[in-house]
Image (cartoon, rainbow, N blue to C red):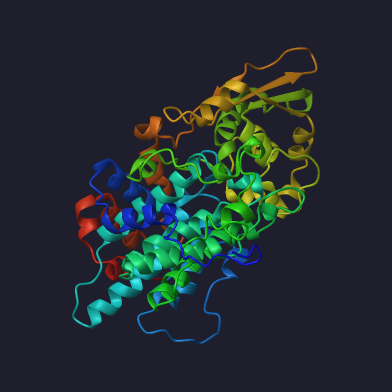
Amino acid sequence: MSQNVDVNNRPDYDQVLQDIADYVLNYQVESAEALDTARNCLMDTLGGGLLALRFPECTKHLGPIVEGTVVPFGARVPGTQLRLDPVKAAWDIGCIIRWLDYNDTWLAAEWGHPSDNLGGILAVADHLSQRRAASGEPPLLMRQVLDAMVMAHEIQGILALENAFNRVGLDHVLLVKVASTAVTAKLMGADREQLLSALSHAFVDGQALRTYRHAPNAGSRKSWAAGDATSRGVRLADIALRGEMGIPGVLSAPQWGFYDVSFSHSNKDLATKPEKQRTFVLSRPYGSYVMENVLFKISFPAEFHAQTACEAAVILHPQIRHRMHEIIRIVITTHESAIRIISKEGRLANAADRDHCLQYMVAVPLAYGTLVAEHYEDDFHAAHPIIDQLREKMVIIEEPRYSQEYLEPDKRSIANGIQAFFKDGSSTGNVVVEYPIGHRRRRAEGIPLLEEKFKTNLATRFPAQRCEQIFALCKDQKRLEEMTVHRFMDLFVV
């Protein structure tokens, strides 16, 4: 046989894709803990989206591509009067969800925000539920939304456990796209072949770079990138359901596949491994593990690796608020991922730059005892020079134990410690917080605060009676699960 031709034996779909498809099509969510957590996640995610509507830099992105477009059974964007096609609605919902960096988080070799997938899930479910009800068919129920959330969390989270897409410069929204593709295709009625086709297209797409999350290029794209990804998942599901063929070897094809093109150096030691090992590592089967262990971002609208640092800063605030100008050094002891992702010096160019700067996120609560979304805005930063003065005095040190326990499955801590030193030689104690209030280990403490956060966010868009109606519904697991999706979404129209 000639050495100058390709062998055109079409392969089976890569096993990674088959495993995802079989999970989505066959798995029954039975974990009461996962469903309860999904309900809390729904509240928290929608609340963060409602709060983001206060910011014009967010709302300028919302609405139809062509002004005046009318869409039959258009999907609603919570907190607005918009009715859009499911693809653009997914974009808009995903955008508001992520804008303030205030939804849940998953941290492992890769990190991300699995509730970003709610953009695609809600858009598709609302549209389908309206359409079915109008034609006399059974509409979708909110239980199906919660099931889809559990599955989307699981797909994104399991792929993230031991596969560091960030190490090859790819952004974690790739995993949002993959998860959204899978669960929205199922909601739309895809069979196994259609679901596999859709998943293959999610991986063959060009993928977002992490450039917009890191100095010196951090910017607001990071606030809508997940909306773009979940929207793309809906579009790819639609393409597959129209009968588009898949790409079975999208991951494993030599030279042209995802592994060889985009994932050949995803771990520090990968260059020493044989070529056949340059594949995804999947250390546990798909179930409901990720939803049960997801991290809620309750106290601060801040990148999650800094949550415990912000909490420690609030604790320290009373000890130092009258001694700001006596401080000569602030030592932040942290974990490796925080250093790699959010530790930065120099001028911060915009709000998106500030909410991904460990030093900024610590300086504000040290000085003022709290941290809210408005603290990242240009006018606040310009009016409070103490923030940059404190940043200049900060020293960042890795604690190996924190880095190790960040990755341990039974811990997954996100530890930070802060200590301030003064001109007279005195110092504060080293305030260490190892588990943020949104961690599974602090659920009992965290959920009441999550509920209060939801109430506060509802009140930014709706009158008191509507707020009470929505909150009472979301607190009742059984009633929520039995409610139709389009009636649920009715409650969020202003």
